[in-house]
Length: 264
Image 1 (cartoon, rainbow, N blue to C red):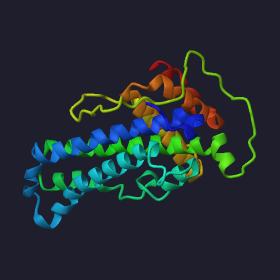
Image 2 (image 1 turned 180 degrees about the vertical axis):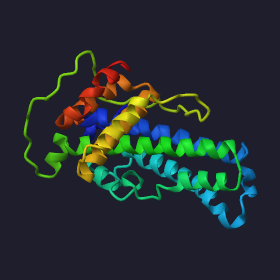
Image 3 (image 1 turned 90 degrees about the horizontal axis):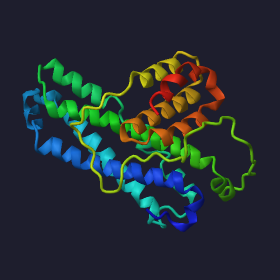
């Protein structure tokens, strides 16, 4: 995929955002399938006064998918919407990407069904899909932060550019993009992927380390982005970025490096 000329200096990160956009476009189709062609109609078994809690799962999840694929894919061609790299970064500040939604929706929907003994395959799949989308939001946040650290962003905003050597050398890994999926690919909602437990262990380690809320959030985002890349097949490329992004806190992650390396 050709990246627009004015963003060529940050092409790997822009390519990543476009790939995530394609993934969200596939998810939009999955939401439609789960609602209209599976057993979602049986949410009528949930009492009317609480049914909205389950319906909110579909509404919120699909709205997220539509917004994200439109917003991300537009980066490469809509100059009026995104005239600069700075405009791209600013556009997502108050969006789904930074938590501008009710994050309790999937858990509330699941609990509501369990409360009324309604077990629907479609709802279970929607919960998993919603949480997968949240992992991709983390990948977008990490990528936007990398773009904000780029020379192009600094030049646009009059920030002095300081050149420095990388602190960590990861051998045997090349590239810097997460290849989420090729253009036009559609994610399957029925795959049997089991996420390695090391990612949950990493998040637990971060939460127990007493970081300030901003640092904790950024580190968790990096783990979630790495986890998303493992399922999608871009783990080797994402691993290098992960190691660079968490280098200031490497002592926290050092017990897990061997386990992560085993996934390469």
